[in-house]
Every structure is written in structure tokens, then in C-alpha cells.
Length: 402
Image 1 (cartoon, one colour):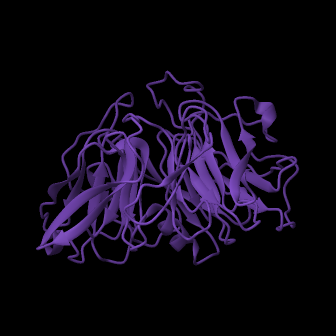
Image 2 (cartoon, helix red, strand yellow):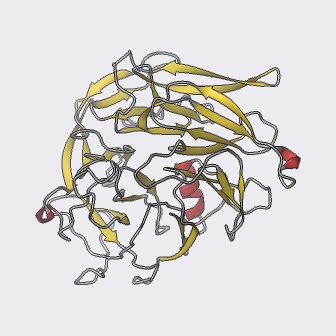
């Protein structure tokens, strides 16, 4: 199943915030995807002894139970085609179109779809060859191309936009980006500061990024390692890109620590710290508590329980982190009694338009064919409102909405 939750928020900058996080090329209000979703809404949270507070919102059947945020549910297909999606204005009409699996869905209604690649519907116990999808004009012809990353360890490909032949069913030429794209949370962001996104991943045991350049009309791709060969496998979990030390250059975050960016082309410097138990999903560096430095947040087990943020603390120039539990496998560790498993994906976006980024995540349904802890529990899609301590005014209901 593939659904869109189209939000209506009183903030014109919400779309650009979402776009900047996911690398999308079109204006939208909100787009998230979960398989077989049941959505609940709740609002109430108080993280004891923390300077960071989260409010957890569940939405049930796209009914609005709060005064500010509303979501409209649109079902695009009941079929399973992809693990990840992208959004871009592929047909140039000023409306965002959705890319999911081998199809793209024409916005704003998303009822008409066209195929850009081969592929059939999949069984829920199977895996898609479209694990991640992004969009970018790789060859500089003014048309948005599609980047498809398959199973971890498989090659990545880009599909060239047919240009003016799109409406007549023009062919999307499939071209190889690179082989061995490993890690289950790759990113497509600018690493070297040239404002052009790179594909960040593990390749042959080392973290690094794949950069594209147009030479004599051809698009060339090359891998630049940022770590030595760590012998990390294709299914390594947990990775992120963000400015940990505040020097204006993005660093690499992974389960075992963070890698500080040096000069372009040089290996990053490693700073060990255990950010996850067995490897989570996307890892983010962001100033959650509003004290001027970037903290870290990540799920603890992509196929288990746990969500933590790590408070940034500096002592004489040395950066350290204090773990803060948001959720664990014990309901008593969360003010709402929540213990959510399989948070295999996460996003960092400003949901409510207050200028502060919030956390979007959820419970993946049957991530390992029903073999993970909590696999049969209800799948969820929810967001956690970030309220730094300096934002003291907050009105919450006395009981959560269900």
C-alpha cells in the first residue's frame, strides 16, 4: 500500500523545510509513506529532567484532533512497490509528482501513474529493488531525473528524463551510477560544499560519497572515501550527515561515533561514541535543546525498540554527549507509556511551521517478514514535536487523544 498524508499548516515555509530535508524538487506540505498504516493522534509529553520536550501526535483515519495540524489521506495504490519514495515536478506543471517504485504519479491528484522502469507488485514478505529514491537533474538538461538505490550492496542507477517526449510516453534511459551501495540509511545531500548533492553510503567497507560531473555530455560518477576500510557490511544500519562541531562543514554520523570533516579529499577524523545499540535508521545532528550546539538523535534498533537523543556537551573543546531516553522497550520509560519497535526510518522536518524541526518516524510493519520484536503490533506513523526549554509556553490536553 502507498498512501500520502497531505498536511495543511498555516506556514508558507513548511514545504521548503520538508524539501530541504528530503532533497525534493517541488512544493508540498507533507508527504510520508508507511506500509499498512493505522494512524493515531495524541498530544501530551513531558520529558523529566530534560531540557528537551517532545509532544507525540497520532492521527487516526486522518481525523484532526488538534487545532493546527490536519492531514488528508490519499491512497495511491494498494500494491507494494517500494521501500522509499521521492517527490519532484517531473512534468513541469508546477505541481509535485510522486515517484514510488517503477512508477511516477502525476500531482496534485496522484490518480494517474506512468511507468519509468520495469517491475511488478511485490508480496509483503518480499523486498523491493527500490529501497531509496531521490531526484536530481544529473545531466543538466533542465529535466529532473530519478535516482534509484536498490537492496543494500546492489548497484544504484539513474533514469534519464525523456524531456519533451515525456507526455508521449518517452523512454527513461537507465544508466549505472555505481556498484556496491551499502548501508540501510544512505543519504543524498551536499557533503563537499558545492551545493550539489552526493550519494553518501558505504562502498567496499568504507564510508564515503559518490559525486557526479558532466563531461563532454556524459555523466561520470566517482566515489570518494571519507573513512578507511572499516569492513562494514552491506546491511549496516544507522547513518547520518550533519554539522556536529559547528564549523559549517557537515560531518558523518554512524552507530559507533562521528567522523569530523577535514579538507576536501582527506579522510574524516573519527570520534568514538555509541549512538545506537545495534544500529538504527537515519541519524541527525540538530540543536534540539536550543543552547546553540547540535545534539544527536537516532533510533536504537531498526529491528527492535529504542529512541534516544544525545545532548551535546563541550569541555575544553572536547565534544561529548549525554544520552536521553525518549522511548525504550519499557512503556514506563515514556510519559505516554509508549514502546514502539522497528523505527527503521526517520525524518527531521518542521511539521507545525514554528521554525523548529520535529522528528517524524514510525513502526515498520514486518520489516523482517514478521520475525522482529513487536512485528505484529500496530504499525504507526507519528511525529514528535520539539520544544526547547526557552520555549516555555505550551498548552497540552490532560489526556492523550486516541
